[in-house]
Image 1 (tube, helix red, strand yellow):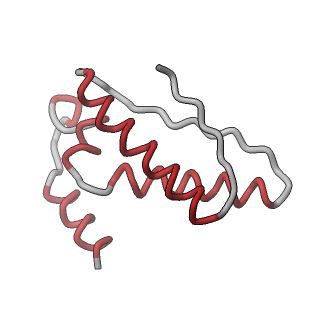
Image 2 (cartoon, rainbow, N blue to C red):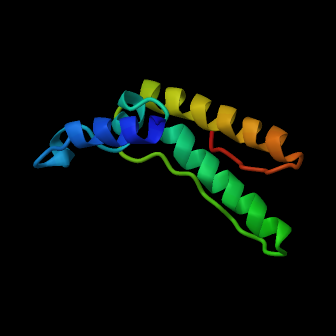
Length: 99
């Protein structure tokens, strides 16, 4: 039941003013699997829509980055998940990432 555990973790981190604490990129770094779940859902939706004849253009943005290390860690996770999804479905999904 990893989804139930993840929801319990999120509920424990409730803050009155999240802008002062755990938000944006930091939330994804503190909650293991959160970025993975989100990126995998986006990638699979793009593939599904493409197969249905659409031409979606998804953009994955990393919010509230305060340190280069936060962006590096998140980018590694995003890149890994996109590679996994393309292997799972046997197609190519091109996602340019700013350098």
